[in-house]
Image (cartoon, rainbow, N blue to C red; front, side, top):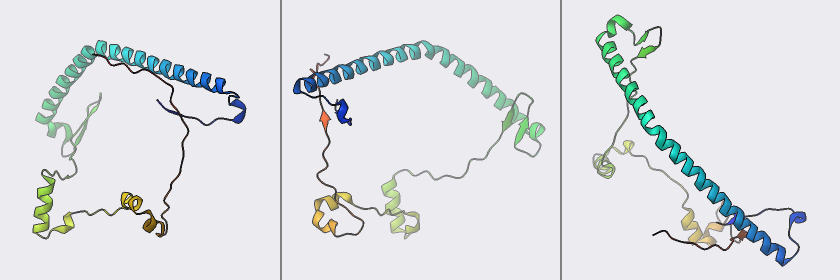
Length: 169
């Protein structure tokens, strides 16, 4: 794991030995962080596993009650709402809401081809954007474009403590 460092000169080590010691300490801290994260994830997994059956039972009971309420309310909608779409039932409300229209497209390429063939291009959106990759391939041309700057030579300082990677079989 690489660490980008910004520090004050007063905090900087003064000798090569101090730099080597600090890099070792950085590696130690990163490994300790990884161990603590793994322990935390193990505990979260245990809690999730323990709670899963209880949560599932609560969800199933709630779904069964909701289905029963819906069946009753559908059968008695006019009595509950009159010509409206909401019924206040003291302990809560039931509502019927019309979803807004939406478009579902399957086989996008075939639909686009058909729309083009039928001259229905108003239903096709064309997006224009800057091709930065092309500009990086031809930086001399791109430099002449107002508002475009080719950024080169930016250097980051990275510390990579030595570690041994092992694999689990």
